Image (tube, rainbow, N blue to C red; front, side, top):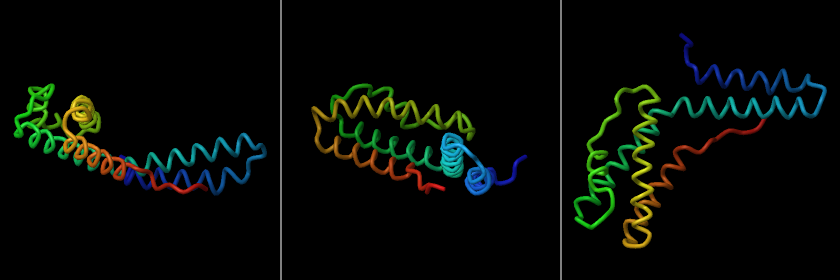
Length: 144
């Protein structure tokens, strides 16, 4: 078991940026090491928050679908949205969270396409959800 994998990934990235990168002779090698370091930092950050962010997105999408279905409009994929509204991930493995998350976003895209032409309030609610999603998932990684 790797204890605190997010911390270990950050430590590797910092080590590359502070020890490997300065000793590299070519500009290409320095750029490559810098890119790898940045990607490791982003991976570490995403690793730490992955389950929380996906579950938060799933719960927000489920709530939006429930409210939308209760409004009784003639929207597409009502059965699929109703099923998703009551769905739970098969496990807490990231692959299962990702699968449910992806199916929710597929339905959200379909609903959003409909809302853009038919329901300005729902369109705004979906944009607000997407904004919260993007804020939760942005990377706060500074360069080396």
